[in-house]
Amino acid sequence: MKTRYVIIPVTFFLRPIGCLLNRMKTVIWTVLLAGVICPEVVADLINERMERLHNACAQAVDSRIAGQDAATSMPLFSNLTPRWASTTFVPNPHFWLKDIRAQVTGIHMCAGDWTQSYGLMPVTKRHCLSCAHNGPPPGNVVRYVNTNREVFEAKIIGWINDHPGVGQDRVSDQKQAGLHPDLSVYLLDKELPDWVRIAPIFPKLKSDELSYLSLHNTPAICISQGNVDNTTLPATQLTPNNRMAYITRFPGLGPGDTALRNPFYHSVYTGDSGTPMYLLVGNTLYLYAVVSGAVVADQLPYINSMIVRANLTGGLPEAGFTVTEAAWPSN
Image (cartoon, rainbow, N blue to C red; front, side):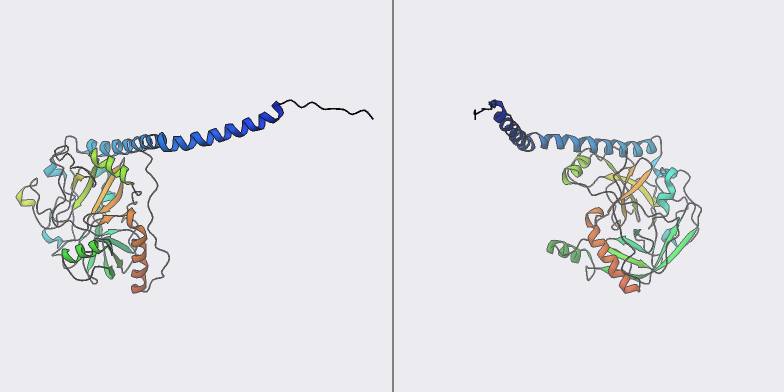
């Protein structure tokens, strides 16, 4: 029998080896790129997204304060009743956020015997959020007012506060010990009506994103509950618990440009602990932080755990009330 030989080209063996080497080369370059180029690419992507957000926030604010007189357009109401003893409220027709007033007025309230005001923000139909070192105890009444001058009141029946005692010192001690954020949750005795808006929670920001917004003077909006430090409004309007919307520096790194949006710009007023800090993106107000408390999205697990505990004190089921962050704005 004659032996036959099959000649196999050398390339038959080299091609798989070449493919393997190419794949290894791809892996090596991927690793190198991830360590050298990708961080820069990622930074550019972050800056691009933050630039869009900054521009949207700046446009939303600057377009509304353009040509406005701060003294007449900052208050939410034109009848500035001292101590909020009256239940008759007249919306300020010159309010600089009047086109989205329904998002603002329904969020703010007073409590107690109307000798003090607190910045409680609803985060569910039955729960409000504030800072731990400044808030009303159970038994006090919370009041909401809408754009049609309707008034809704509810009683506080539960209060979760992990900072025992009173005063700023005990909050500082708790913070330094790393025990709890400066936040508290309140349980109401009945559900809020639909017209009381629950502001969407602005998504959690990374440190470099926060730095970008802060260093570029991205405007944040606060609602004063006392404005006792205010030098913009006339003395006749410096009444306790006067509600007004002012622009402040986005929290984070950098001093900010305090003259950029004067006289609407102010540092956070004395007595405004527990009031909301918003980001206005287009026509939507997002709850970003509790003044002198914490960034809301950063503390959602803790907030939700307090809600469960508040439910237990009020005889409500543990589940059914969960606070989540909103989707990223489509700015």
